Image (tube, rainbow, N blue to C red):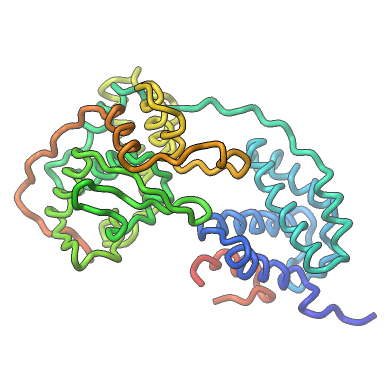
Length: 353
């Protein structure tokens, strides 16, 4: 029997799918591609631990409908993934199989079999959001007399006011913000789609004071991330979650009944949407500000211009505390694997390439 060529291995197809097809033909953002990568990282763990299969130089014959269903069941039972997560991982593998069928007709039957499998019905999660009182309480927790506390206050207010996703906040640079009146921010969301969101006066006050305290020169900081860690690097999603969790716990100490049990950075996005809805804003403007793009319904929704969006945001504006006077000034502290040799490490280091 002839030895399988590299072009027929799992590693070859996976490399091409992640590095060529998803960014090139699908135009997916880095965060979306990394989400796909994580699914295949879990698949490799499954192959090694449950099937004793080494993924390096692996023939594509291993990929069957039976194995994919077993992988999905393993995610749910062994990894304790929710039905939603299970379905999301399954859809990634299903999309991979559909792409395989366009690369090689031999995979057409596999693609059809996988697409015939119905997803498990998952209960719709209850949307968690903060009341206006809880949001006010949260924003009073950071000690804005300290530089780090002012950064945290600016971060929380900015995330809430714009209704941005946490990944959109981490990727935000100063070049995306217009400081001249009327101030706006250009947010790049899913699928690299951009939207313009007005910035309200108090949020701008926080931002300007934050830049002043941290000695950020706008002319020199266009390519700099707006929210950074102590080392001056990009603030990560886990970093934002840590900051939010810290002040939520402080808020709970002050008023335990105000805050729901589970709160994530995405809760602030839900909170903004609910506050706008409760203030009587048109759902069309809310969708436009949040950047919800449903391919099946987008054409039915009018695009709101900046003035209308600004009016919608203003209706939902809540009083925010003034930043405290700074403490005596202290300068802030700004103190390659082959896919066929080690696939797990290749996937782990994929985002660093």
